[in-house]
Amino acid sequence: MAKVTFSAGIDHVSGALAKPGSNPQHSCEKMLLATHRVAETTSPDCNRLYLRKKVVRKSPLSAAEMVNRERFGAVTRAVNTRMHDISKISQDQAAFKAQTTYKTMKSYLWAICAQAYDESQG
Image (cartoon, rainbow, N blue to C red; front, side, top):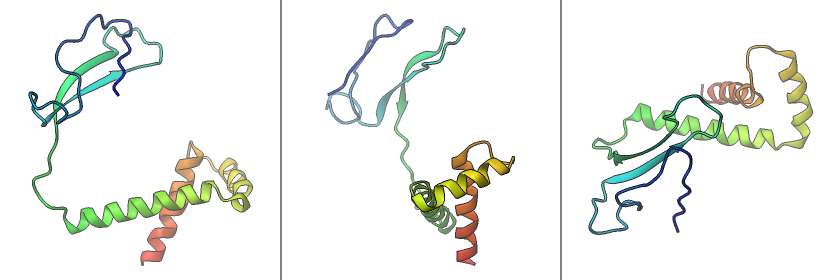
């Protein structure tokens, strides 16, 4: 079930608030997107509601796109596994603190796992 919470700057909403295809009277090719910024800002436009057409891909995936998606998925799984591997956590934390190239631990692990994946693929 959808939940609507009004925030400062949004007094009312007009139109259908529904998932695409949930109401036969409305086009299933459009969806309602809402953005809300939690951080304090001086901009009065930080809360927005807008309709956007659903993006439908018209061409099949190319070989390069399939390779990129496979690499991304494999590296993501490797990073998640390594982040939860108790035997490597303290070692990775020490190595992360010793370097200055990467700002977050996840980006550091991503670089390590991506390099290992690339080396394994040849």
